[in-house]
Image: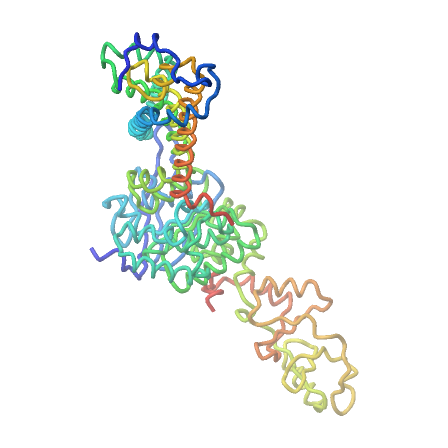
Length: 233
Length: 389
């Protein structure tokens, strides 16, 4: 669902009952109107997951590249750092001449914000693998590739997951601005009725709940795949 | 090529003028090292820091590439092998162990078998076998390295190196990070293990005492990666080849030799063992034959009771009058160094030596030990032999 920006300005506060008319926080209005948030919520889920998944794939590839060629680390951090510093709203508008209005623009911009966080965490995780563990792995006859996939990356999982959690929370927040790229999401609902407190509270609240839910899921995933982290004498 | 997983015999190892030179440095790290390690023996590389001992060891599995010269494993150049395949045939134990923290103990032990493509059942069986060999309960296999003590982790490191039954093992200061009491225990355990598995082992340490204890042969390296001497421990201690070796083995090398020998290995003095009631004439005849001018009173089983006084020999028959108690009592199986310590801390000059049955077998004195140290070493046993008995 895309909403032309010009149209947003002429929206009137929604709701017709007295509470809504007084612009109070209205539970009854929320119960009646909750259905209209499902579709934006699903869009928001999509606008979070797609950039994080794509961002993770790109960051992982870059981190593996930089692990083999150490000198690349600095330049990669500089470039992803610049992406990270561009105000998101500016990025949404700047990309429009190239990618048009819609999901593509939003996702390209949102992906660029995840790169720095995820790349740095994967790189740190790989570097924190103790030298003796690498030495023992190579000494036993693992190839460089086997050391990376069987030892270094699994050992970096806690740090990689920490990066994914930060990137996901950040993306849930930034995806609320994807409305300026014409990509919908909960931001659309906020803008549609931005002076009506109940509406802003529901749309904003759903975004917060979504961020919390993703975080919990990632935490559960991390615990499931790193049983060795909890094993202590 | 035979299947690498079924090596049960050790292979000889030979350094042939092996040299390591790092680019940009004039002096080599290892300079023309040549030595042969017979199959099934422990060769200790020892020397001060910077002598190239670890570099020399790491050239064997090509963790460090050889600049010139060669290393032959079972007669075959290590340079002809693919590094990952070569390394899977060489057990590797390092000071910091380097267990994989994200893998269980069983999985850690099964690392090389898995690389060699063993099936799961065989890997499981092998890791259970090895846990038993290193004296850890089977359920340890399900735990993670962080749940084990330092000593247990070190044992697992050894088990992991043995997993695919490699003909050769490399051990780089394997007990270096363990406290002295546990280190001693792990050394003894390892020697007992080696008596069973009989691998060819390159063992790196900076500790000469550890070298003497663990080595069938010791290679002393000096700065610049030059071999100063290569010899069995007793020979090294008796005939140091240079001033450097003499200084490195220490001024107490005579005492160190004593640690390599047991009381039964040396010529003890004979003493007259006399029971109460023996005719004095018979007793005097026995004393005249003995190496010691005093007689030892023994019980009916021949166990020493004490040194007889002259008064005990004045009557018809020997009486129970003692000059001094039979202390210290040393056993035939005691290490000479410990026996000497007993002797030095007692009031008498002679120590009564008894066999396993407790009966008097001879007398040990400072003179006996001194005489032994002045004599050339015969084929003297090593720490491994001492423990294997």
